[in-house]
Image (tube, rainbow over all chains, first blue to last red):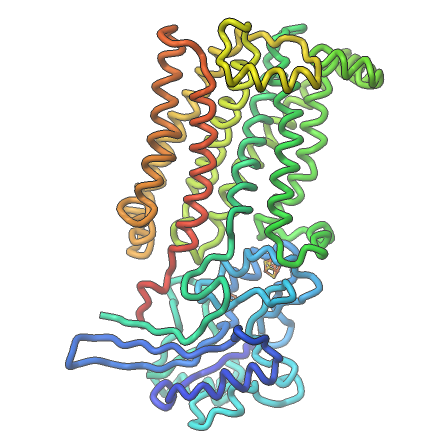
Length: 178
Length: 348
Ligand code: SF4
Ligand code: SF4
């Protein structure tokens, strides 16, 4: 089982509901965020292409943040390959922040590394991650990438999708349809 | 054309990634310097003929200084930790893929190795200390009577020193997300920079212990402070040319490794070429070429060359320049590495 997301950027309007939902659900401190909106414009005028994406930790299948952690605080959860941090094991050395090509982590004001958890506490209760559950355009889809019958797998099979910085070799679990 | 706007403002991450300040470069510099002191002390112990007084500065004062410098480096690293009270967590596990985990365990072995090396000739070097603590003489006599222990101590220092020196570079090199650090050369580069800093450090100590009339004024102040406290026996300054020679060899290799570091990046991907541009013609270029290459390598090479030809006296200047260059190298590589990024060329 490998949890992942498929995000349809054609539907995303950058309303930041996902950001607010995450902050509320996970008590993310003021001034910090676990997910965010990125806007990319490519091409030359007048043939420009604009993409709005909601981004977060990619829960990489090959996570350098886990490999470099000296205490084992950063680890891969047994369920779905979700990458997590155990605050009581983290010394705040920031190696994982430096190892993540997506800058998805930050140091929580209490001193430990923090980031998106795919809301594993909700997922284990059969719920969707908070960001997915509030999206007003239903552009975000969460599920098991290893199950060919799951919604995310079917979306990937039917659409052209890309992941972020595939050249960094981390094998992200979040895909964007555009 | 690609323009990216990120609506995120996490402290230390946005707008520019900068999570490691002065503490990490200081730790890497002191770690490299101590690694160099270990290799030189260990090699000296292995190659020395019995009762050679020249061993004192390398085999006693070097490791003793190493113990203090390493502790300072560890303090700097500790200050950098954001979750300080949990530091003991490092020693509840060994994470085989984490260079930082390797480093924390290597550091545990480094202390006893340095101490053992210092103890071998401590009574000869610091007779006043040995008189006050008689067990030091007993330990030294015990070790000197057993050549195997001497060989083991020497070997342990050389091997652990090489490991520690390379580790300080690999610590950064293993962080693939920062393209400037993505180089296997960084390990050997930091090792040889540490070796040159250590040779310069010992050379500097010998210069300050030269006969009064040859000693520079600043050195007078230093020596009166240090010997006033320890009442060390005068050091044999005949070792100074050998250390200047060694330092020049290390500096030459370091210079060549810097060349390889640049070639490696320039022949790699666009991301790596962009990263090395930070040092080649970007915002870090001026400080890198002036303080690391010019003042930290080339000028001391020239000065020590003339010292060896007896054209000029041995002075503290090359030692201070080499140490300054080593420090600048760590500061610039740590800062520029954090400024290098994959996503600046993001494509999809
Ligand atoms: S996105 Fe970054 S923090 Fe998340 S798993 Fe990948 S490397 Fe680790
Ligand atoms: S900051 Fe914490 S989670 Fe990150 S590498 Fe260091 S100990 Fe591990």
